[in-house]
Image 1 (cartoon, rainbow, N blue to C red):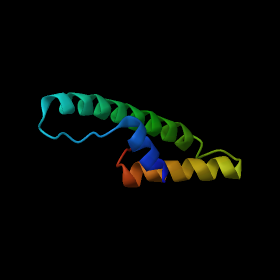
Image 2 (cartoon, rainbow, N blue to C red):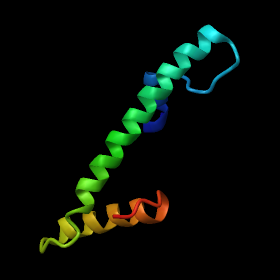
Image 3 (cartoon, rainbow, N blue to C red):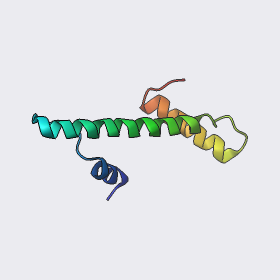
Length: 77
């Protein structure tokens, strides 16, 4: 089982199905999913701030995070 499968199982389904009771729960799951994604993006942003550090490992992580945010998510400073 991959990490994304664990998260999906913990949060629950997020896609609406057209039934009010089920969709109300799935909407709450969607909000939890979005909050998690936002928290993870903030974590990446903090790592990306380390890109100019002298320590190689910190600089490498910062550059990787910055490139991911910029190139994959189109998030620019």
